[in-house]
Structure formats: C-alpha cells, structure tokens
Length: 274
Image (cartoon, rainbow, N blue to C red; front, side, top):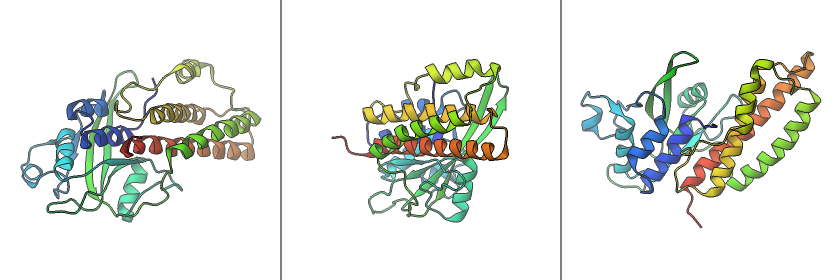
C-alpha cells in the first residue's frame, strides 16, 4: 500500500484531534503504525505542561497532543522541504536546517492570544532511528518540540492548485522520461513496480473527517513519490551526462510537485468544510 511521511500523518490526524473530530488514541495509532511507540522531547515545556516536561518520565505522542490541545492550538500543518525548496519553513535558520535534514516537520497553527498560550508557532521535528533489516525493519521516533518563526515561506498553495499541478506534472514527466527511456526497469524491480502501480493509499492515511478531495490528491501524490523513488534507484537508458542531468531534473520536479500536493492535501484538513 501507498503511505505518506510521518509528519503528514501527524499533521492530519493531530488537526482532527485538536478540532474534536478524532479520538486521540486512534490518531496516535495512525501516526505510529509499525514503529515503536513515539516519544516526545520538550525540555523547555513549549507544548506539554511544565509538570510533565520536568517530571523526568518519558513523554509520548499522546502527551504532546494533550499539551497542544490544552494550550489551545487549533491545528497542525505539514512541511516537506528539500534542498532548494523550503516549502513553508518559517525559520529560524537553525530550525530550517534541521527540517531540511529530516525532509519533514510539523508546524502548529497559531492559537488565540491568551494566558498560557504557546509561542505563535512551534515546530515538531521527527528524529528517526531505524533498526532491524529489510525483512524486519523497525524505527524509534522522537518528536522534538522547537520554537519557530511566524512567517511561512513559499507555501504549497490550495488543494485545487495542487491537483491541477499533479495532472500537469504527470503529463510532462511521462513525456520527458519517455524521451530519456527511463522506463527500462531492472528485472528485480518488477515486484516493486507492481506494488506502486496497483497499490492504494493506506486506509488511515487521513482521518475520516478529511475532505474527499484531500484523499484523492494524497493518493495520487503518494503514488508519484513512490514512482520517483523507484526511478531514482534505476539508471534508465540515460547514459550521457546531459541525459542524466535532464533525467535528474525531471525526477526532482516530479517529486517537488508530489511533495507540494501532499502538503496541500494534509493541510486542507484544517480548512472549514463547505
């Protein structure tokens, strides 16, 4: 099945919890999946109550969601940056660097001003430690809570814009990659190709309250990212330096459109329903 990054799952399900549209424990299960239970680090008590942050006991994802809800945070937004594409990162520079290294992060939407309110924006960064093997993989995930600037740089745009961009990217990328003959896959990739071609989005990638259009766009974008991952692992028939450069540019462009679409689909969970 096709899935989306952890930050996208946390932003979507966390927003539903904060809006009272999903149960916290169900959201935690949807975010964690097959990982070990997710932890949280909030040493300065930005999100969780100071008593919990300084008690010394390990914090979990449920504690983090409870703290954000207690502070009146109305929702969460995903960011999926890449080198040359900061995609909504608000700063400061140190935070942007960490988010780029991770390739993902979650930002809080600003709560209403009031006593005890959290800073205008916080960032939740996943620190992932993988273990095991290709046959039995595992991951230890800790969400670091850091203060973030209020400014958004180069936001992903609306869901409608993202859907149109996906359709255009599919057409252009198919033509460009066909010219470079990158459809010549390795024999040992046949199973992976079939999984991407026939796969569907995991049922709980988005909460039940998500708009149907978000689900549709997210499924298409997840498929595109999976295609890019397969294509990056194969040299295709682009044997010259020029062809390899054009191929890499085409794949980066396709991945960028897919990332923007995932962000738009997830962040649309915050939008009022018509």
